[in-house]
Image 1: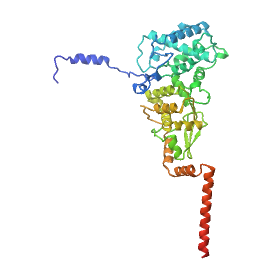
Image 2: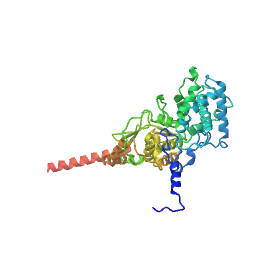
Image 3: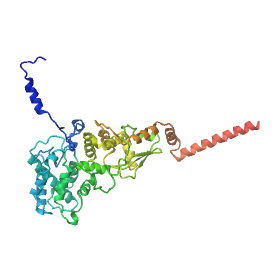
Length: 417
């Protein structure tokens, strides 16, 4: 190959070689991601904190000046209260600094801040979250001048902010700071997972209170909430995601709907023409929660696609206001939004996502087979057209009686002759 005089191949080769990476740019421990643009383009604000930034991704300190002041006040209250000998700023910083390299591995995007600032941020944000959880359940008394408890609207915004994928701290940081500040008093023996569950319980999709499994291996607060949603889920053989007809079309095909008694949202079953769906509660923060859970699963294939598949399943079922109204009447969906808003919300969830494995393949195949069979559809049409009121039933019976009598009269006349 002829070498051109104006290009130094050796110099270029040396330059490229010096930039080569021997290790993957993403750690195995990585679990706190920036949401891909394909998912956030539909509504950017669903992935950004409104009140309290947590972690390194949203550090606009001028915009969140009020939140940063509150964090520092909470930290001072914790240190002043000093529930344990380890409740000192020096102890907090030393404990987290010893694991700073491991902490950095949790973040999928480069953390563009000095390591000492990164450690300070982890301590301030982590102590804020722990103090917030303790104040919420009255383990630590709240003062009249606490802005987070003085204004009722704040908690709802806090819940939403703390469950954003880009607004997370590693769980082990929270656990470390929690253990350093946990006294032996009976009131402070509540474990961290239970405190977190108490704080987020009002925002969960579940309609029933559950017992938190303390053995859960949580990566951060959003991962904890995902584990809570999937808690008690039965093991299903995963397969391809299959689209199914909407509620209105299934009703026309003779499918009945029933509300499930199970505690787990994933345990959807279909048997003898009855689709049983566990009850789900849709509050005004449900779209933010589900979108961030879906983004979390889309960023890490090792998690599986359970929440994403669930959103896709409901998206298929709910196409119109009539679909959501029917599910409301059956007690399957509880919501305080309009039918139009809820149906539009579910129809937006499944945009630009990819499902590799779905736990609903078997139930979807059963629904499709039933939907394509003729007898249930004929039976439903017969019931709707001829047996929908007492008068129509009487008319049908009268017609049958007349038909039978006419047949007998004709038969008797033939035999007589």
